[in-house]
Image 1 (cartoon, rainbow, N blue to C red):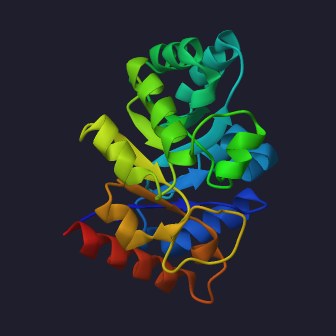
Image 2 (cartoon, rainbow, N blue to C red):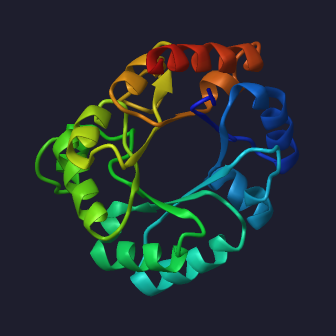
Length: 227
């Protein structure tokens, strides 16, 4: 079975990211390129080639025309997934999906894992995190989005709301919950049992004494839960 780990390439340079990905490639199923690497290396970061799909995590959120044009540029890079913020609204999501035209999958980010209920209240959102995540996901689904980012704490509710055809990508995954800026975390096994398809893991692999063994351990835990 293919590893469900999407390894977050949170490195300062493209050379470091490529080396990090190559080192653990046998234990992962996809690489994720985020803002740090993209702002350093630009589109070349999205073309990183270690024989695995690329998940470009830019969390686009702008007027529909701007996002649509950005999606068109990203589609030329050959990535599998591209994130946009679900809070961008129906028109933005609809036009992003249309412009992707099957060349890549648009992924709607629901509620960031750094948020908790108090943070949502501070920005004027009603309800708790799980309610908001499902609300945004349903809206995005109605506009043609079929892949979503949510924390492992909401993945069960998301799966129940969206059904088996949704692709659920969960950051905040740990072999055991650690202390960092992500507030809604869970184990790899729990995330898979609750319905996650992909597990985004960065620091627990990158910063481990033995990154390859750390990746293998998380992959084993996830695959056993899926079996």
